[in-house]
Image (cartoon, rainbow, N blue to C red; front, side, top):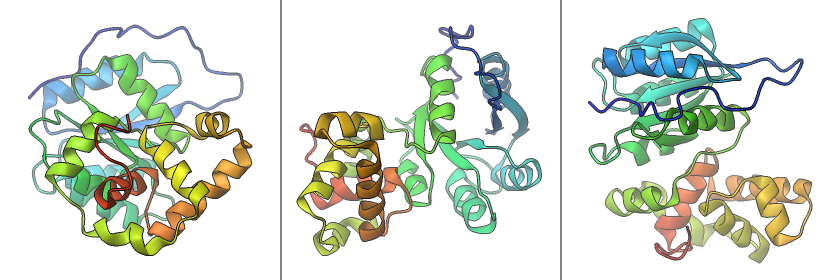
Length: 238
C-alpha cells in the first residue's frame, strides 16, 4: 500500500494562533506502516494533535466515539468494516460527529464517491505531500469541503450516485446554480464571495439553500450531484 509522501514533512511557517485549540485527529488505516508514517508526519504539523489510531473500521468508530476527535482520516479498504460503512455509522450514531476525510490511493479505490455520499467531508490522496494532507485536515475541521475536481470528475463518471436526478427537481435559482458551479471548482466561501461580488454571509445563505434543496449531506455531496446531473460538465469546471 502506498504510504504518505514525506515531501515538506517539516512544519510549515504558520503557528497556532493564541487561544486557538489544535485540531484533534484520529487516523484509521489498516496498514501499520502507513498509519505510523501519517502519525509521525502529521504530529509535527502546526495546529494538529493526533489523538489516536485505528486499524479497521470497527475500531475507527469505537475510537472516534471514545476520543471525540475533530477529524477522522479514514482509509477506505479496511478489515471488519470498510471506511464507507464506518463513516456512515459514525455520522449516524454520534451526537456531535467528527468530520471525516477519506484518504486513499484513489486509482485503486472505486468506492470513494460512496464514502462522500455517506457523509465524508472530502478526500485526499496518500501520495500527496504531508503538508497538503495536514491542510486538508484543518480545512475539514473548519467546516469546508476538500475537493480535487479533476479526480472527482473521474470518480463520478465511474460510479454514479443514486441522487443523480436530484438537481432537475431541486428548483435552484440562477444564483444558487452559480454558487454550486463555484463549489464544484473547489472554491471556498470567501473565494465564491469574491468571484461573484457578494458578501460572505450571502454566499453562506446560498450554500445552505443549495444543500437543503439537493438533500445533500455536505458540500462535497452537493458537488457530486452537480456532476451527475450534468450541471457541471467534466473538462469545464476545474
